[in-house]
Image 1 (tube, rainbow, N blue to C red):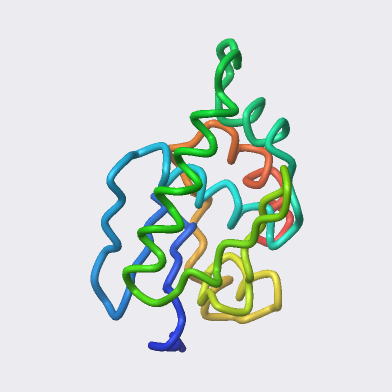
Image 2 (image 1 turned 180 degrees about the horizontal axis):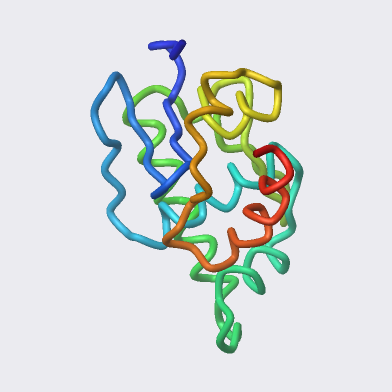
Length: 141
């Protein structure tokens, strides 16, 4: 059962974020990907270096500044809906507050059978780095 006071996050299939039933608009596709990456990490702190090397398979020179731009963009988007506390940042570390998300992936990990049954082998299929999690989820099905 979804909670209307939380940001809705769908990881199964194509990654999507909904606020009060409507898709959250991201001004940059990489901003959405950054958010997806942090959701995938389940609230664990990630360094900027980890994020850069996972999101940009090609050379990562000059990506630290771009990551800061994406972080500011994500903060602005979340602030517009009053959910800026979802994004956690300190120095060169990033995370999400999982308590503020209603996420199919998180519910599956907690054993929610509706979430388990909604998984059909696809997880954030637009992101190649998410394949590692698909491997983990194989054991849930």
